[in-house]
Length: 611
Image 1 (cartoon, rainbow, N blue to C red):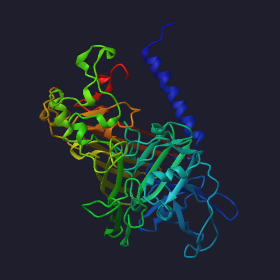
Image 2 (tube, rainbow, N blue to C red):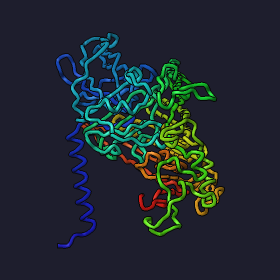
Image 3 (tube, one colour):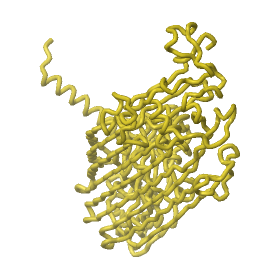
Image 4 (cartoon, rainbow, N blue to C red):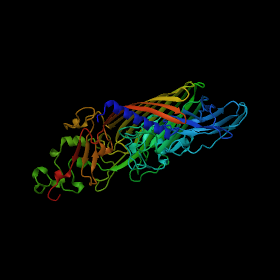
């Protein structure tokens, strides 16, 4: 038998149609609404008979914007595309008393079921219900935890890190390791949902993508004051979120209302009651007179929202700033003044002349374990000038634990959101939101210009700038069809740089082939003196193995997204279809090893017959 392409297409089309039809019939009133919520129900008379033709008006309590729908032949009504918040629901039909529910809560990606009964009477008569108990959820089988604005702001989260709220959802667990703060300054907590990899959790901000595709973490970690509601779904989320393999975290930002509202806050911590380290902070700093390096944390911000044009155009904005200093100190070992001149007699080890024999057993010991000045490398002497001299007596004749370093790591961030909502008419709504986050971290090194170990979390500088834009509209078409379109864009820009980026200390010291330019190969190389097990091992310069600086690092990620959905009510069932189109440009150039090189200096060069 021969099959034509047309016949194959027709059969495939029929199969696809049957799948869609079966799905819509088997799942009445199912909505995947990344931005909105909805209200639906059945209206009946006092005898339980369904009532078609009832006008149901849903009015936002905050914005006073009304929307009306009419029940169908089965007495069913649905009003979708509702911004999360409080609503008044009113049902009217001539010959029956008006039913009013004054306080109905609508949540993001959730359908609120509200069934009503109308009593015979005049329309001018009304029955007002101050509260109601939602019926058992039957429109979907997802497992989710929802937090509203009050809960988010009242929970005791000291650092106001939104992603930590995910850990309040059953089945979640924080990963044992976290991305470095230099690359993740927004503090995105890596959380496993039901045992799945943390990068499988999808993040949505106003229905647009908010997940970094390379690191798998949140891009804009929203300010608490900006959040209207969040829904954290751990199981059975809708097909609209099919890009996620673990959980889905949907955040809806606040919009303005018809009344001007605002907030302000400040949280302050400092080192005045902090205990000092008896080993590294036993003496006051001669410059500052303080035992503990400056440590403080000041987090502040506020929000403001209200109408630009009452009942029509609303605006909301928020800002959060952080000014942080974290003090740190370390007890380290540096070469003594005598050792810098070749005199290693105080170190308790024998030093042999590598030129006196090819094999260690044939080498002769330097007299008194002193290397003649003429045998000292001028390049090594130049590098040694960058490493500070001992500043404390130390142990083992002053050769061990003879240097204390202290300093403060600064971290500043500024984040804000601006959102506009426009009620064009009773069929068309527009919204737009822009979010910006800027982070600057500057971590001191133990040896100053010689680099060396980090004193707090990073020995270098980190500059990160994150941005997100969301635009969208929803429109009612006829009496039983709605459409919504959203455009999303985000940018994740990270630069992590060595403490001496742009300099050429290796070239200045006469070491060729390391500082090849003033960019990625600039700065002092990573240096390692001695073995890992050596208590006198010295790390200087920069690099991941020296001061936790995975640098220089360049990360530049952008993503565009267009999402469109059309929903139609067909009798008692809902048919929905849509598309999610994305384009991403991702670049990440890390430096797990310093680009100017990493040099190790081993004691094997001067060992002899006795080691």
